[in-house]
Structures are given as structure tokens and as C-alpha cells.
Image (tube, rainbow, N blue to C red; front, side, top):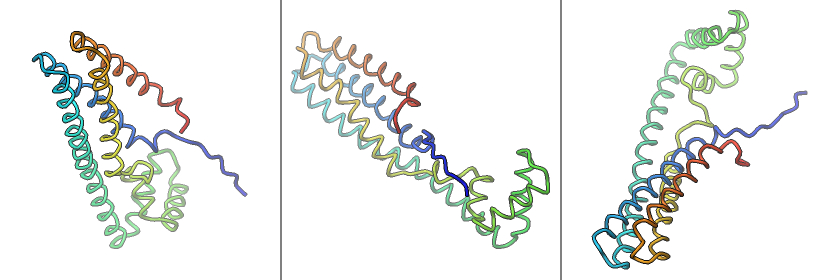
Length: 202
């Protein structure tokens, strides 16, 4: 009887983490730039705040839509490849078995063992074996458009909120340098967070 040793790998979160980091970065830079630009035109604090909020809403929607379309394209490509593989398995299963075995030979197995592995894996889940080992598609790394869209939009709004808070806290006379400094600090913290992902407890 085999004991299972469960490990938590960060790879399973790579889809939404990538979208989240990009969203937060865009939120900080975009809204900080917008606020600085409007403030430089000597607009009233209320006008600066309204412009920032409008930018936050528009930016979050844009990030969500863009991420959804981008990841959906990846998902469509994966589905098309899987459908083609299903047809090939239906039409010539022996050739597909040889193809899978040759992949295992290239990875270091001898021919006999590679054939045995290919035969057993295909008996268990043929399309899963080909998706994983031939196409590089796995359940962990598969494209999830909705998850990516929400992650991107949410972190964009969170990042954008940082320079917006400066509008509420600091007087108009020092608003531009305050927003600039706060944004740089937030970007540095985001960079530290990205570099320390391996230390996160999930």
C-alpha cells in the first residue's frame, strides 16, 4: 500500500498570481499617473478624486476584459488541441501509443519500459496522458479566464486605491510628490511580494 505525501506547490496558483501582480502594478502606475496629471493642472481636490475613481473603475473593467479575452484565447487553443488529440486516438490508437512511448524514451526510459508505461497510462486515461505529456496541458496549469479576470480587476482596484488614499490624506500643495513617493513605495513592496511568493503559506 502506497502512502501519499501531499505537497503544496505554487505552480497551481500561477494563473491568478500572474494576473494579480500585473493588475496591481497597472493599478498603481496608471492611477498615480492620472492623479499627478490632473493635479498638475491645478484641479480642485474633489476633481482629482473623481478623476482617480473614474480611472480606477475604468481600469479595473479594462483589465478584467483584457485578461479574460487573453486567457480565453489560450483556453480555446488548448481545447482545440485536445479535440484534435481525441480524434487521433479514435482513428489510430496504436500510432498514438507509439508516439507517447517515444516521448518517454526521450525522457530517459528504455524502449520496453516506455511501451509499458504508455500502454498503462493510456488504459487509465488516454487523453489525459497525451494532454499532459505530449501537449503540456495539465489540470493544474490549464487556462481559467474568469479566475484571471477577477484576480486582475481586484488587484488593479487595490493597487489604484493606494494613490487615491493620498488624495484624501495629503494637502494639495504636496499632493504630487506625495503620490509619487507612495506609488514608488507600493511598487517596491509589490516587487518584494513577487520575489517572496515561495514563502507564502498556500
